[in-house]
Length: 258
Length: 293
Ligand SMILES: Nc1ncnc2c1ncn2[C@@H]1O[C@H](COP(=O)(O)OP(=O)(O)OP(=O)(O)O)[C@@H](O)[C@H]1O
Ligand SMILES: [Mg+2]
Image (cartoon, rainbow over all chains, first blue to last red; front, side):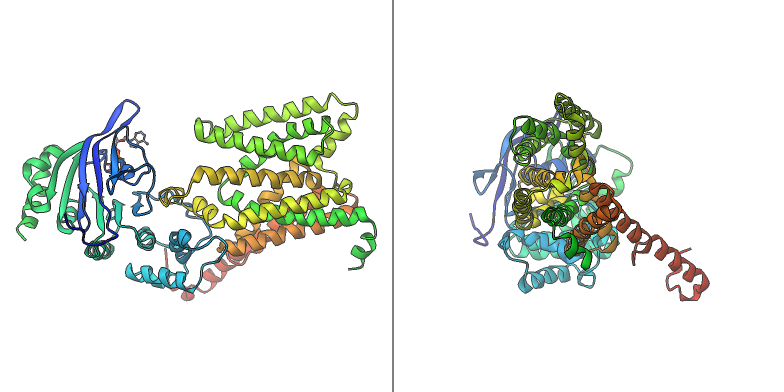
């Protein structure tokens, strides 16, 4: 086994299942995530994508099985795993500006006795620049558009500086330039040996931006390099056979031939 | 100000002024988090739930501030327990529980011969009864509350703004909420003598809400809220003395007056400000850079 970077973290799940009351949301999930991978987690609504991410992030205890972080059983959130939820449960009217939102990620880096200093603000500005939000550094959070808000949360995740990034639907509801910014940021992270997992229904985004795809519908339908997983049979098994499937398969084939 | 020096010859008046200003300031600071976390109803419930504890301390002949603090800490632990372990987080359940506790307090105090006088002083405060010792205790407890707010400001802000992020970032959300309920109860307890059980909610909510109308920055909001709270305490007590009205009511009315002024005249959010801006807009539509209709 090769470890690209000393800081890189490996995550595994063993026979992971999640039940809500009597319904099963995830069943017997075994997977292993390695540094440098960009993994697209693809499945229909209710497939359990968000649930899987929350379990990996330590936000939700599994009903069965376990999550291993670097071989150790994980209980609760881990500083090297950064989770960006699907919908932010944020109080939009909160008196806080973009820089201060990003600075929330520096909480652990500073003593509680000291205020944030120039180095913190520079770091905040640096991550804001990388998502193209530096002109908005002092704008109150509610005055941003939805896509701009998502970029700010991505910037905050960058400043948290973890090894594993779990992004739930980072491409939903954002325009093409923002999607491109997100992809660029994810590739840059992966090139530094970080592990990226993003959930999506957008097959185009899943197939063009990842190097590994996990097709999920309560269980793992397929898992492997993007070009191998994207088959007609796999997609039908995941999404069910509908007329629009043919478009998706065409799209997928077009992508695979690139 | 001559009226101040004149009245401050009397120690009790001095104590009363110090206590009102202190309590206004402390409630102003912690009230910011009450308002931002949407806990106004919880603050009200807390102040009522502490009541039977105070009465018990009083009946036992213990210092009622200290008794109240014990009760406050107990009650806030119970609230944390109730809201996190079971599903009693809907408003009506909290309401039923705390009004029940309040009734228990009234029932206990009604066994006393001096019932109505005692009850009144609990409900609306008895500012002129503030002793030097009470004042020191108020200052000490207030200092602890402010110190805890200062030390946990990042966690409190993070949780109030984005609870899911806070949990993922490793903040023990339940622990900090518990701690917050405890300092909130302490702030309520030290306010009881000044404004009483019924009106303390205004000190927690009104200055902070007013401050929110005036700024979009949290630090500024905390500073303004403390200032408005302290000023309400000072002016309120002055008017109370001058016009012979109940001190708690007077303090709250001053705080409310500040709110109404800000509501109408605030530079960004004021009702009048916005009206004037709209009128200027109609009078000079060519000034409109982004026509939105
Ligand atoms: N907190 C919860 N309580 C009960 N059931 C839940 C809870 N969270 C998720 N579920 C159920 O688990 C299943 C998977 O939900 P999940 O949110 O993980 O799906 P998803 O793949 O992220 O869907 P989407 O594409 O719509 O975001 C759904 O059937 C949902 O109803
Ligand atoms: Mg989801």
